[in-house]
Amino acid sequence: MADDGIAFDGRTAEAEPLGGAETAFVALAEALAARGHQVEARSRCRATLRHNEVGWAPLAEGVPESCDLYIGNRGHRMIGLAARARRRLLWLHNPAGYLKKPRMLWPLARYRPTLVVSGAYHARTVPEWVPRGGVEIIPYGVLDRFRDAIEREPPAPRAIFTSNPLRGLDWLLDLWTARIAPEMPDAELHIYAGPAVYGGLSGPTADRMEAVLARADALHELGVRRYQPVGRDRLIPLLAGARVMLYRGDPGETFCLALAEAQAMGVPAVVQPLGSVTERVVDGQTGRIAVSPGEFAETAIAVLRDDDLWRRWHRAALATQRGLSWDAVAARYEALLE
Image (cartoon, one colour):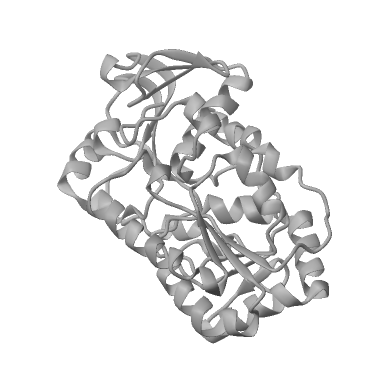
């Protein structure tokens, strides 16, 4: 398995906040290793190590020449590594329109990897004409620690947001300020987000994130609380104490692990029909897919206020939204070798 994005390895995933794609990469590597496979992972990690039976090394040191299964992550430089791979995959984590770029087309035409996408919405973003060896839909798994949640009593009226602040947080702050906070003055919106999730991102994108988060900081009197992003272990009690996840969604969202983790823990969610988030919420049963901003605000207020509604959605989420374990996901990757 190979990735050339931010610097991370298996220890990073345990100790620090990490984005969904990187979390998924580590989780799949460790799940395959737990099933008895020899797994070698290459990334921009800083040193060689062995963690949870996965061998990690800096990508600059190269990859094994041969393997049964090679999984390249996202980028064009990852497609042709492991020259004698018996089966070659390109794992996509973003909308697939970028496959049309010349730097992607040449290695796709040469190696024709199977493209792995995470859902039906994601699959629809793959241009029909780009060369490839097929398309496989394999969803992300959900870490077992999120899938083990038990039924609990309604928490305080506290909403939570744990995604990229550039994916609708400005819009949510508008709605919170104008519609939700005036109706629920005792409610709070807790935000766990920032550039730290993306390897200490800097530059214009980080500046845009910080501008949105600075606006959140200025809304303290309206119940908005901004915190630094946290690792998965610290996130669990925060989700357990949340009444609802509020997340608009985004066309760039191809799975939304943040929503999957919240729903697995029984946290109701309110979203809009954007990107893949409609695949994460069962409308009217585990939350609401709100067509309009007005419906979004009304539903948010209702679930923050109504204990009976919260209990129905909470119990349904626990019953139906646990998601796949990473062991089950790893088994689907194994099946590609048959």
